Every structure is written in structure tokens, then in C-alpha cells.
Image 1 (cartoon, rainbow, N blue to C red):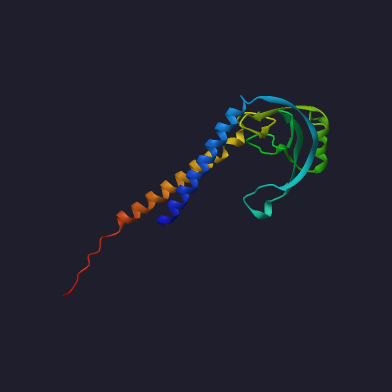
Image 2 (cartoon, rainbow, N blue to C red):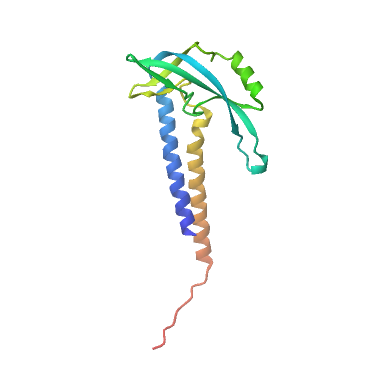
Length: 173
């Protein structure tokens, strides 16, 4: 049982550390230099919607935008929309036609200009939507939850151990 507490604690620390890195990077992205890019293509992609029960999973459609940009004369191509949502520009569409309709009304048309935030330390690290998003907090919150579960598990074990009678061992010589 002590192993469970340790596993939860280690997972919590790892998630928390990744979350802090994501938050600090997302905050820093607000100050990254920008360049003008061009939309190559917006794509509709199907993926399984997360659910607590596998029988309740369903297909949802998301929009990903591929864009090109240049830094110091070198061309790059990327898909990352933000540090919270990754490549997902828009999500939650129940059918492909609904997602395509969103694209038609969005600013992400092929050849249209987009503002690209470029990490000065790594020009391949870019986003179209800088800053902290709601989903950027997920690893931090999960890390705290795992830490809380580890703490609770540890204290339950300690109480169980405290309530056990102490058995004496008698050795006969």
C-alpha cells in the first residue's frame, strides 16, 4: 500500500513540474517576437471524445491549421495553435460539415496572413494564440490532485497502522 502513495506522489510531482513548465512558457509566449505567416490549409480531423465510460465515447471533429512563416530567411511550417490546446484551433464539432462551416467563417483561409509568435530560443517553437489558456492549467491541477491522493492514501495507512494492536513476540530459549 505504501507503494501506491509513492507512485501517486511521483506522478503528481511529474505532472506538476510539466504544468509549471507549460504555464511559464505560455506566459513567456506573450512576449515572443511575432512574424507574419500564411495559412497553408485548415484541416478537419476526427478524434474520439473523452468520456468516463468507453461506451459513451463518440467521434468529435476538430480544426487544425497548418501555417508557414520565415525567421531570418529560413522557412518553417507548423500546426501548433496554443500551448494549452496544442494543434487544436477549434473543437467540439459533432459532424464534419459543422467544422467545415466554422472554417469558412474563420480567419484561417488558405493564403491569409496570421500572426505567428516565435520562441526566440527556438524558431520552430511557435503559436498562433499566445498566453495561458484554460487547458494550460490541466497538468498543474492533475499534479495537485495526484499529490492530494498520495497524501490521503498515506494518512489512511498511518491511521490503520495506529489502530492495530501491537503484538509482542516471545522467544523461547
